[in-house]
Image (cartoon, rainbow, N blue to C red; front, side, top):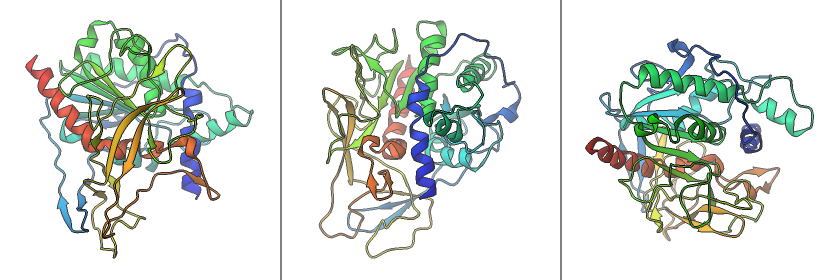
Length: 375
């Protein structure tokens, strides 16, 4: 329960992450120093981890999928992680702790199969800082500090580490809310935009005019519609299809003059599609009767599908569970937020946005890479 409460507080970052950023010098951390990166291509850091997966078929039978990184991947991925820091002040330290390692394990390390990995440490707003702000007693500090750190890391990456390769930007929650203004200010309409293969911005609300795919959050970067389109955005926030989210859903919210973009990773064309998910294997009954699982992840092909659903208030990724009658495989998934027995439906499946869609996102990046290299 303690871990769940910590994660729920983390989700509230959207309120803080959308605060107006100030134009201030960003060169605060020396990102030429390799020690200031959580993941750095070619280094033994937080990203080289065991990602082997037990694939559980609908009949309960299992096979093993062994993970292989591509040391010669032709493109890069630049990742900004969500709120995880348990440090006591408003801003996190630059020390790599178990929380950062765990989020990389679940959200980013698997991208090593398709790209070279770059993930800066940054002085994000901590869980304690969020609690303080929500209770009306904000801590001393700077809520824009993390943004400025990531801008500094991005500039160092572009100038000295990119080496002319295309790049995919990836963020979730606070990470996405940092990347949105970075893309708008540092990439959109600038020469470096030519390197942008795509931006995968999850657990946030990228805004577009109703009926359009560009012109809200970004002036020149559209949402993605095909698997081979490049220079575009994949963005979504996931909720269960049944029951649907309440009108006050905390993610994917429309604004008075714009709507939240929704791109279905399982079907970029806008149709429904099957999800290729990767879930942590522990603390959940994935088979019945229970079978020992000796891999850190499980995959459940055919169990989940997704489609974008637009309402007056939200534009969200609706997740449908397709149970099997024999019951030899789990007919449900973890990921809902429950506090003291109360289901918080307005949060949806925010905690597992990335786990739900990981396999689909990897396929998208593979296809986009082919298009980028052909160009």
